[in-house]
Image (tube, rainbow, N blue to C red; front, side, top):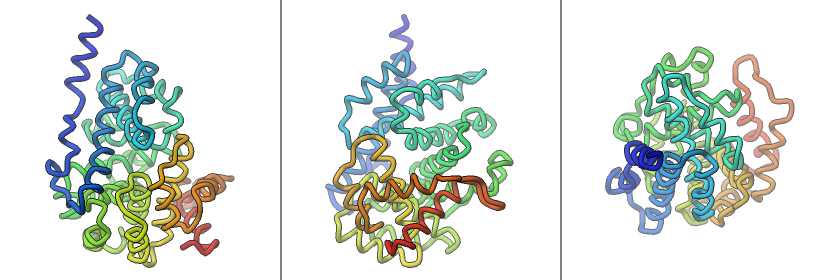
Length: 323
């Protein structure tokens, strides 16, 4: 009976893999290779969600997640985190699925897992979102990033083409001052998918947003282009030039991708190439910069520690002459 119930839960909750196809989403197609790379990322996410939804507990899901191709494993862990956060949110008294997940192998993918929690927040009623907001005061902002990605990916007409921005009051009071920035970082990541990893299309879409949103959007672009891939070195260098005054934000996003890949124990070639193009440095140095920026990190008078962390990374890249 338990197996039947798990299979039923998996079937009811898991999104259809066709939801990650460009034909379904209406995203720009640059070429087949880029489309395949980005569709594989989305389908791995959905596959990871299904692994978690159909498993009796996180340790069983880990065995399935670890069997996935190394370059795509982070996306699968992100999807699994969404599943655990969603199931926690659907339980009237809450749950500890996400906490147990992060206590295991999910810890190696902690950044992606927090992003996955944001996808779950996007699928729950607003009044239930606080129940699954990650408790980590630094990384909880990645959940808002994940929310932004979800909205731009699934509601592209509104959040990308109409450039809608949610009012800050939809978030708990302690998040409102920085929430629009964190959400825009997620929208920037989604732009890489919407543009099909085409620098020209990406720039066209991004430049339609108000100028005061560009820095956060470029940060998200840097993370997605480095983590997910889909562009060659020439295209990445073109993108760096197009970022102009926001090169440091682009580099900061790439440094985040470097750290996430290093922590997970596998760095695909495309990530190393992108980090080199955006940060003009190695994966190891980019990841080390993110670690160094954590030293004595606290909230400032006007910014949360997460924003200070990002700014420190960007400033360090500028100081080194990387941006």
